[in-house]
Image 1 (spheres, rainbow, N blue to C red):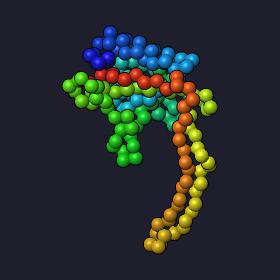
Image 2: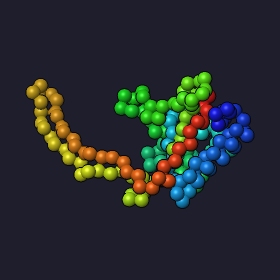
Image 3: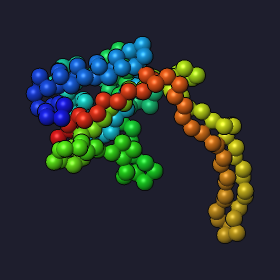
Image 4: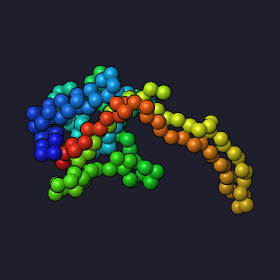
Length: 166
């Protein structure tokens, strides 16, 4: 989609949705657990789904609307880092193009402990209350939890990239 926007015509929206199908089929069993993208990506996906008249949104356990794709697989905005401004998945630059940050990606992820992609921990969460500090106002707590991610099956994560957002 490097030459066309996905939301300028119905034909381009349908072409993009065909690419979403290809992304889905890149995952083992063709059943990802979820998709992730950034805020701009999610808005553009919603627009393409509206153009194609297939937008499906459900409420999550917190009452928030979540966009669903295919067989009711959620698409999430992965959000921002702790500073609340830096995107976890920034807008992208495609080599050989003039417009910087004019593209985004979507990842399909299949979760499965010991089989696909999952979170791991070295040991259980350890919390130590170190008590009141010298200023007699601030409490200090030490939290130790070494965690990580593991991926056994290389077909448990797939990426669709170079999607033009404008």
